[in-house]
Amino acid sequence: MIFHAFLIKYAEIAIKGKNRYIFEDALVKQMNIALSKVEGEFEVKKEQGRIYVFCPEQYDYDETVEALQHVFGIVGICPVVIYEDQGFEQMAKDVVSYMKNCHPNYDGSFKVYTRRAKKSYPITSMEVSAELGGRILDEFPDASIDVHEPDLTLSVEIRDKIYVYSQTIKGAGGMPIGTNGKAMLLLSGGIDSPVAGYMIAKRGVKIDAVYFHAPPYTSERAKQKVVDLAKQVAKYSGPIRLHVVNFTDIQLYIYDQCPHDELTIIMRRYMMRIAEHFAKESRCLGLITGESIGQVASQTLQSLAATNEVCTLPVYRPVIGFDKQEIVERSWEIGTYETSIQPFEDCCTIFVAKHPVTKPNLNVIHRSETRQRWRLLRLLRLINIDYKHSESADAASLCLNLKLWYTKKEELVNSSSMTAKKLFCNVFAYDCHNGIKSSAISVDV
Ligand code: ATP
Ligand code: MG
Image (cartoon, rainbow, N blue to C red; front, side, top):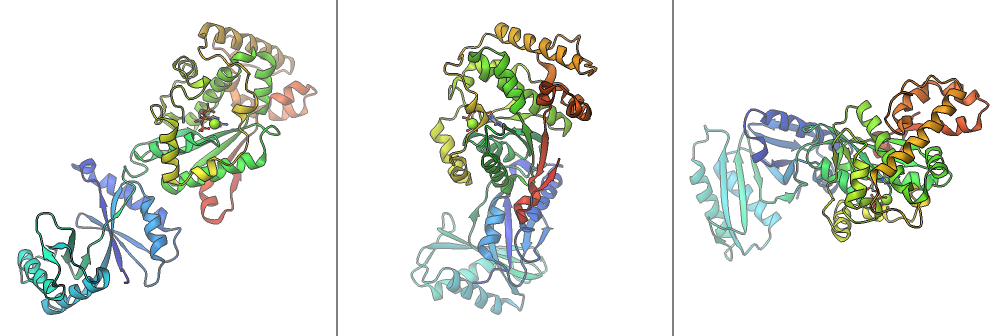
């Protein structure tokens, strides 16, 4: 059967009142983004409180439905057959032929539900429903009418043409991207963080992402895996800008300078600081992680408190109360699991201590970071960098001053100090959007 359009159902509770148009416009925008990846010219139209997708003459049905199923804010997708309005008799024939095509030999209960958008139509909705019900019964003798709890509802909308539909394909639910600000996802190659990103995006939040890469300790393949995961999340969330941060020098530096049982916590504090730096730069209103209480040493309540301490933006942890199995199931559903389990190393696992602290003492962590900071200050003075925050009591603020490092890049590269060169932190930004469609990833270096 050829469907000419899709009627889009969205959650109405969220959109009552005068903000309704904001929600609808955001939904239309996201649908257009999703459909731009499917071949053919689709037209998304808001019409009398409904949203329709009008399809080109030739299109791939499965691909179109799949694209729409990735758009947050849609709860149902109804494939519609559109007939010319050539009077009631023809409409009845068309509706019967629709039933024969879509539900051959139907023998369950059903009702016909008619809406007249065209009020000038000579017969009332109730009369149309009753008459069409009778015609269908004539052709499907084993079927029965049940107006209260039918197994099948056949909807007939009388507009300039006659729209007929009876199936509702489940949508992703949630809110359209762009209706709830933007947040920065800390995306590792694991199972948890893509799920976390998906869950926040589902509430209408646009996503940017940051990945900490530690070459040569973590490979290009590991980085590619994260780019792939970002693309998979972007199928739902729309374009993601992924910042790939070269974390090697910072990690080596921490490894050099800190007691090893504190490595993970201090490293995670650095990650949060750097992520927050990018988050603020791109006007994100929060950070997102895939942390879940008790999953690993760095996710005990004490460790989470220590990590949280360095953030000024709110940190959203949507899987915080999930068991691993629940997160795994969710990653299956959203299609990230297969990529997440590819066996590539993560920077968190490479520089890990044998016995990491599970109940970090904040005073001890502060002392370690302050010691580090003074050593760094000495170094920066040595290479004539005017370190503006040298009087600040804020521990380990080197990461907050990444910008300073960029502007001093030349100086650092030309510097004779190997350590200074090591300290230079490279940041690459990948625009995943282009990558999704053409697999040509544009790199903003
Ligand atoms: P995941 O399965 O998402 O990797 P995890 O169980 O491995 O999580 P951790 O390694 O402790 O847990 O990381 C906790 C969270 O910190 C991750 O969910 C992610 O949000 C963030 N994170 C960890 N490593 C990185 C990284 N290399 N780059 C960006 N974020 C990271
Ligand atoms: Mg991980």
